[in-house]
Length: 374
Image (cartoon, rainbow, N blue to C red; front, side, top):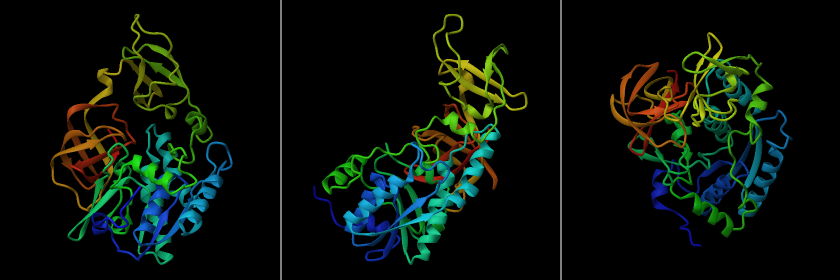
């Protein structure tokens, strides 16, 4: 396999040119490993940084950073870069995990990856990298940046099936101006091919799913360690009680599995979905059928807003995602103030969930977004 040592298009958007020092976050996975190799091939002085963000039950079968660290060391040795480990577990608990628990306790469904990127991977990590003398940082995220005059635009990755701009919408100009995304211009299939061709020891390693402190463990069991059970009624749309839930924090809108509803209503075999959570009465409402009206919403309101240009966009037509791996929905930014914005969609969106992020796009450019409140 032949890969250009330096892609001129990539370097044009990079904050610094070789042989500048770039510190790259390495997780032990194939993406960040290939990203580090690409930077080295392009002539940068590359330093790998392994971030330890979780310490509770770290040696369990679900989230063991020890093996990840060994993989990072093996990759660094192969491609010829220095690597070090840094512990951000305290910052993670204070800035990310505490908010994660607060949101679930309030009945919302947070996305801790969004907060982790803004507070840890591109803040604590960026600060540490700068202290090491780095002129830029890099990660294995699938996203791109483009410099337009004095502003850096956050763009979707070439491989839209892997695009992660949704998780990066809270990055500011100060952060984006120091970031390189080496994988933004290539497809995931090529990343795997590169890993195999250069003999990376983790070339066949399975992609990580979810956040480290949850890993592959049963989510409800994990959450139950930190939040108390508060059982209450499960009702259907006519108000009839059909069961008991274990606590509203353990359910999310659109959830199908784990509700405990067997059989069907009136012979209708359609599955049941979580549709509403009434915190005041501690009641969980479920409906039958994927396209039930209670699951479809044409508008939303979002708060805790953040714009990648540091200034809000104009009111008007855009597209937006209300969850990751969702097709962009055409919408109108209908109202906007410093604290919140409203979106009206051309077609009602499915299971719009408070706590998740609504992320706004103008074509391939990620403009920013906010946390869904209604």
